[in-house]
Image 1 (cartoon, one colour):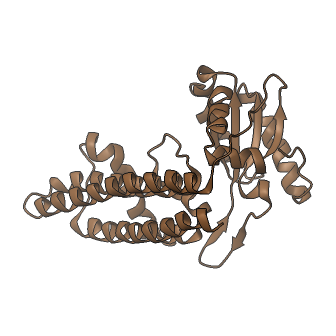
Image 2 (cartoon, rainbow, N blue to C red):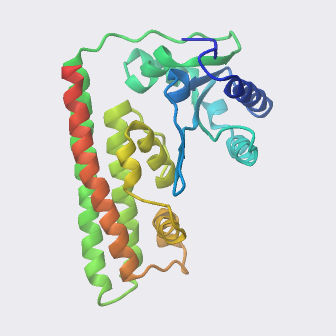
Length: 289
């Protein structure tokens, strides 16, 4: 694992040093690791008139044990502070214990193996060491990705069927539209799960389709086209789907209309097609590459 940031511009190096300082003030980190596009050097800063795409800093915070990895309210406090800090590039953080990380490395979970190979160690307490991965044959990696695809793609499709059933019932009783919204959210979450597991063999334990979509977009830019958010109306509709995970089940005042569901279901069907095509291409590359 690298320990220097010399491949990055000075401004980014300074931001990462400040980011490391803030993290150490907030959480009991044993290691702070930069991974992803900024670690590799292939990050994107694309500013256009109608949209912009700027890569996040991807950070893995390694803690001494599972209890420290849970951290209570500290992650939310840290992320809130970073979100308010306009001087630092937007940051995505995951937290895991050293035992969890080393177990995944030893079992060749390629998300963590790639971090080991490509990551930059920003801070190291010196109390722990990262393990070495066991060799995995290309056909074994392909089978693992295929199994994940088969299971989660089928699961997502089931929720899409559930959406259609509730949507049809909603034409007779609009109260069913909230059920349809939840099913559509679950289909969306599972398509993103397919993508993350096929490409990285890792999915964070979250249900936030905005964050899952951001992570999928880092893996292939086409995934970012599933839910365009260039206008206020597109953003409003996406947030309506995002909120369905909680509000459609527990919030009496959550409402969604037939036309809104029609639009969102069309976007989810686009995500489905993208997921199937791009993930199958990726699975084939495990043998070819």
